[in-house]
Length: 216
Image (cartoon, rainbow, N blue to C red; front, side, top):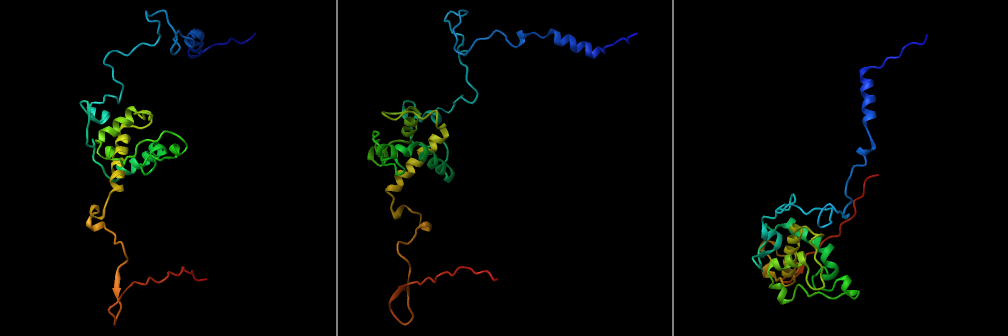
């Protein structure tokens, strides 16, 4: 006589659950992206967001930070303090996105221009030296002439950092010794020292440095 088989309640429950699963759970009714649908009057399956909906992180309460404008006119101040870190970031982004056309000097003679692309104006022209800071931000955000917008490639803060670097670049090309703080000025000629017993002066002799030799 064959022994009778018994199933635990847990095993029976597992069998019932598996039997209840159908392929409908995997292939549920759904719309493919941008597919046509006759369910809606406009035949679009994708629905517009509810009026007033704002994506997370896109509230943009500081309108000047995101537009560079005060009303309809470009502003002329930075929306955050400028320090060495901001300028370094601006230079890095400038060299990546702007220098190919504008060159690292900002004179409009970049690599692409040397290969035949339309030359942009020099940042050192009087018009652009006097342009407000918000103007540069607006051009980067929305494009101008042959220049496309870079809103998708460069974040708003990085655009402002580039603006700060452009202004520093403009100032550097016309700087004089009087613009350098007193404690940071470097003498244009080596210091002269009077030789003993004579009224003449001579530059200081710097002895050659011998390479360090490790004892064997």
